[in-house]
Amino acid sequence: MKALMIGAVAALLASTAAQAQLKPEEMVEARQAGYQFMSWNMGKIKAQVVDGNEPFDQAKVAAAANVIAAIANSGMGALFSPDTTTAQLGEQTRLKPEFFDNLAEAGRLGKEFNTAANQLASVAQGGDQAAIKKAFGDVGATCKSCHDKFRAD
Image (tube, rainbow, N blue to C red; front, side, top):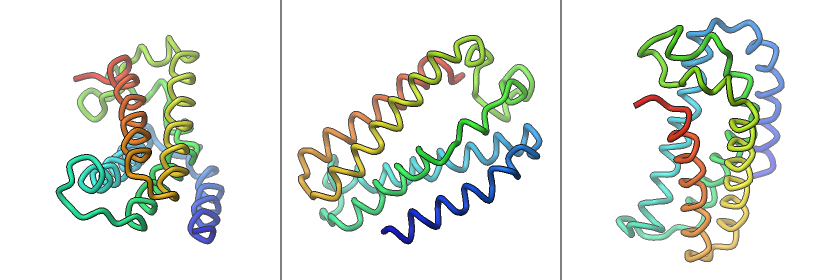
């Protein structure tokens, strides 16, 4: 697991300079890819811990939670710029321009998401399904709070 995290950090550091060179459309594409990958991993946890559609496999749940935390802590904030909202890019994105009028609120919500994602990764290591389910719900709530405020329908 340490190797995965070190690899993710190394990739992030290597990509930080490149992010500064990205066009707005590329920033949106990279941002959406990260969120889609987190969503896919949330679905794996949901199927095992919330819905019970799949048998619980602690190792798979922990791996999915670690991916979510790694992406949450990857510096995705660098992929948000005033040039990447619905006002500039239309339907290519769902980021409302109001995000940049409320940066303090956006930052607070981002920190809450990171904290919740880190907590999910932490409790997933222990395998307590009730604790994982609660932490999973907390992550989902942080996603929803940002979507409700800053994501266009």
